[in-house]
Image (cartoon, rainbow, N blue to C red):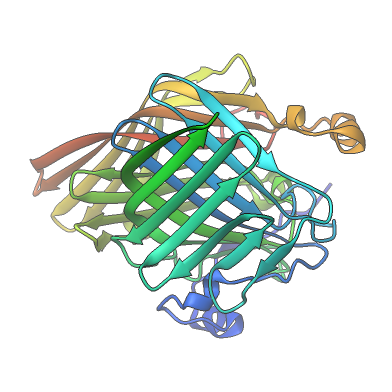
Length: 362
């Protein structure tokens, strides 16, 4: 029988010192953190939701997160959703594609595509034979992370997953060219940076993650469940800002609930129509509710694998799945039990479900 191992978000002063970081986020934390060495993975993520309903996601990877043992093998992906219901998924993944990244800040280039920080914000570019996307992002909320931004796993903290939202919310503008036709868009954007040294499937069972701009509020909310060998430990992440100023991020004051579950036919995974993050600080209470209206992506992750990797995943019974939802996020503010404010806005959020569905709830 395998032993149960410890895990948790690192937040002691000793961990800050060990990681060489301070409470204040440094620009170099958005630089190349792993060096692409064997046993690691890393990616830089950007998304934008335009006022007209267009959604754009561009991600720059050093290698596949499911294969950290590989040498450096960079690629870039783009997801584009249009108001008329069209969905595009494209990538640039070529053996030997040129790659460069600064270690002092965000300046990543993969082939013709790039993401880089500038004095005014960020510039993001993607191009392949079908889609060209060029975007800018200017932060409305300063870089933020939950404590050190690292979840450590194992009795010696030998494994970790790190996550840092460098732009929790910002003003995004982007131009998209598809089939020779160019459209321009503006709205809200987000950028984060992720890295680790172990396959996520071995560390995490599942997570919900979402971010939204709701009236004057900016929200990042996630609920991560560790794998069985880590006792299915929970790692909540929550940040609420008002007009760019963070007003709530202490997860000791947070309760979380999932409601109205059903089984997604395409993946066999349980999905919830409602997620509630309830934050209480003395007489002030904020309730953030994600209300699902539909799904735009539901797939079993094994369907994205090829060759020997897919064969091996089938052999061990890997059943991971990914879901992306549409709906509304509502932020409510209560003072001494009285509802003072309630605002809602459209949003997208995700469920990554790596593990097998447990026979009993947990």
